[in-house]
Image (cartoon, rainbow, N blue to C red):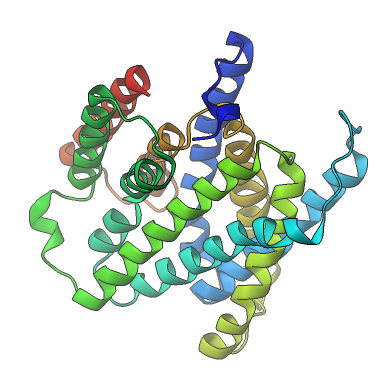
Length: 298
């Protein structure tokens, strides 16, 4: 873990980063609803999520006041700035493909194992300290996600190849989180977001054209869904998470993002009339408890 992330930040900054992280998790938690309502294919939806998000990100970059000395980007920086976008592109493509190859329960659970890989990769590559309390919270949160998705019995209906692709999505989302955490020691939020978003959009477009052909929604409603996904879930959610990663450890930040399936279940109940049973409510409570426990050891 970088010294810039390890250092103790002032309490107001820490609270603001934590609030941004939670809001980012909530915003991204809405993304499955937008994807479900989209009039184009899931990979095309992923492309438009990124491409349209460049509109508010570019406006923000142009209109924001310059804070601090300007950091010049050199050719040596290009691979570092492109890396998060490539990881995000692979994550999104793998995630959407897995939904068509295995059960929704399996795909959702395995894709939300990113915190496990963030912790593992951080420990192996960066020697990030991991406390027992944090591991306890991580275990609780994972158990909560399993419960939220219907318990272990619901995970038997799946396909091995689809399960592997969903796990691959989790690995690359972990790489995305870690890469952004490293970059935040040098570059600001908007610069990282523009580079990663543009890179991911360019990488996903060929997949969308090859697998789905027509990527244009047929109605204004379809465009409204895509703009909502781009502006709320990506330009809003990912920006908030990128900001938070300047002040909070990547492992804890990724764990907090396990709020996403909880938020998705609540929104599906409100918008799509998908019932929330006692098991789902208990699972959501366990996820929140795990996050609170890990917060004390993170």
